[in-house]
Length: 371
Image (cartoon, rainbow, N blue to C red; front, side):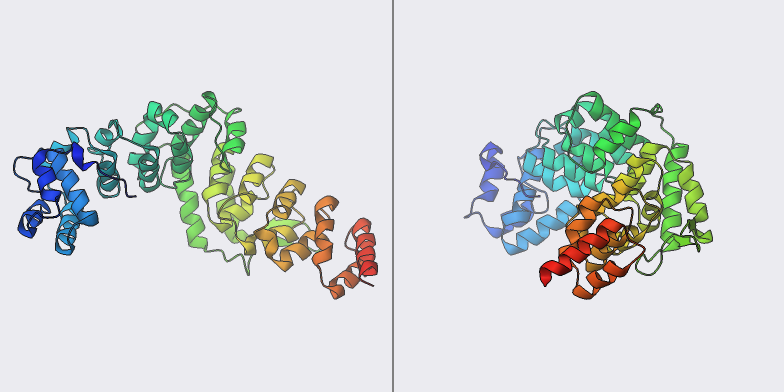
């Protein structure tokens, strides 16, 4: 993130260093963080400007100094009011340092872009510090989504953020928000503590198990179908399933949104509509997962409808075919894919006894229109 720094606001010694005619040795000294007669905040601003647009040698030295900021310079700068451009440069370097972050959050020059960048990179404790600054969160509401979507942020912290946003009437536009608001409205939000909660550990454990299982949804689903078409969870996925069973609805929604494929393939079959919808709307949903889901007769009509209206997922011919042949797909959505099917697949549909009669008739009409 690059934000302009108003050089005219800097002390005269800083302005002199940044003039084009200033000798290179003076610029190189400033690139090491030394600007005689200049307050620490302005010396830091000079560093940022030199790292972005100084002579080649000075750029390299200034960036090296920024990457390992001398503590006296950083402490002195944070005791003053920094420009937004300086904050933006500091954020990726020291934004997760717990003695620095609170001072940055109090800066009047804080912007939504800078705060969202901090939230994207936040560790668990840094995310907690940002989330507890409710005034700042409500001022820059986009940070709610960034913290919610950061897998390092505690599950309980994410719940509190959603509750805060809902209580203050924030209209946020990201997939899990409205679902999470509905879920949290029916749940008791635990009070925040300084310790990791059981729910946080459960989320982390589920993620670790998910990674250990290494599901490849192209070749393997989490369930097997018996002779009667009933789906049963495979043995190796049962511990993951049991972990998920211990979660609250809002925690399942967040795992469905952020989790990996094996968790999502279980959650898309959840009996709670909010959970299954969050899974199928997850930004991590892949075409191969959609292929498995669209063929399943154990997922809800709402799930299949959400697959059908997702243009990215229905680019796949197999997804289209699965939606047409799945009797649980609402006819309004399955029928719209008939014109995209190959003639031989349409002919097979007209003879199939495993698809709804309405699809058979529509397939015949489509063939008839093609002559």
